Image (cartoon, rainbow, N blue to C red; front, side, top):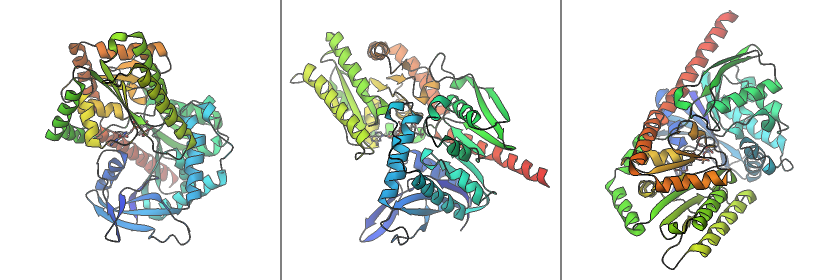
Length: 502
Ligand code: GDG
């Protein structure tokens, strides 16, 4: 059945589990996260489709149905599972996307690894995604592609299906031309993105960077800019911009540039936060802490998240402030999504070594400065830690948005708690009421955490109240509305284009 909305996202939109020898598709256990948000768009169309990959030994005979029909609380939609071999996945995802693109997107040129990239394989996998999307899309449908590992899909799809509207959302930062153009495939990638009707980013800086990269590689005829709304200006911080491009014209085609920060599901987090079980857990954590302050740090194990730098800062403040020893504890949750990748294994080792050294240096029989958690904590428990933490310490070196800081704020229905946030997280442009820190500066890192630990209650509450307003206003539903507006604008442009042809 053809679909009015086709979402192209590398992961499948459900958990596939075996029950009594039969494969069943289960809704993700937690409605928190990007997948349920994307699925909620199926509620607004007659029929939707999702394209993802699924591991197969033999792609011509994968041993599973390629297209399955799903009916769940989000609506009726088909899921097209593209069979890929383990080698194809490794090459396109773990090597090309994670070793070559990811470091460049996050401004880590020294980590960029060109040598192992198999570009023909990347093209082939992206072509296959585009074919699967083309097969599902109804005439004039919206095809919504997500993230850099599918950068070539729009260009291929435009060749296959000139009638569809193509939108692309970047969950990562988008770097300036000096950095992006390190990629030798830059022209092919940006050429593909310019085949979209809408190219989307979290914040104005990334949209501006994209347009400057496009101008460096192609003739771009017209760029319409507008002033950035006050809500997205955090005075003086590293990622703030004053104006933002909203459209450009290339080869006579209008491309809309959409800027919309992904938010969190505030209603869901409020419900989790107000559960009696959460209150019990919070009491347990607080009882265990006694009069000690709890600092919480949560993130994926990734060099972009600045875990080691943060631990080093904690070591320095214990060294320089003996009064804090025994009085503060850092819970550092760092979960690895790609355990078998060398770059991530190295980060995990460095985190373990640094935390071990600090614990050895300052710990006593009844006080361990750092609790290092490398396994995923269930979300309901995480919310209890958000509630119990005096400070959330979120200091990535680069981060497209960062949802953990928004979850922390959403969970603080008690109105207390301090957020220390790196100015290199996209979220910083909205969350200027946090204690903003420069994650590359020792002095700034150390003084920010000390400020947070010593902040008087009145100031904590004032800042938290401002932060809560922002997180509520730009929640995940607001992001959804902004995406819908961008699709509608693209539809108008397409109509005008068709009308001018007759
Ligand atoms: C990419 C971009 C952008 C983490 N530990 C646990 C756990 N988490 C959950 C958090 C949060 C999510 O993982 C992490 O989201 P982030 O946004 O912080 O980071 P990325 O994974 O890097 O996501 C990022 C995002 O895409 C969306 O566009 O913001 O910049 O890099 O939801 O809660 N969840 C549970 N246990 C854990 O231990 N249950």
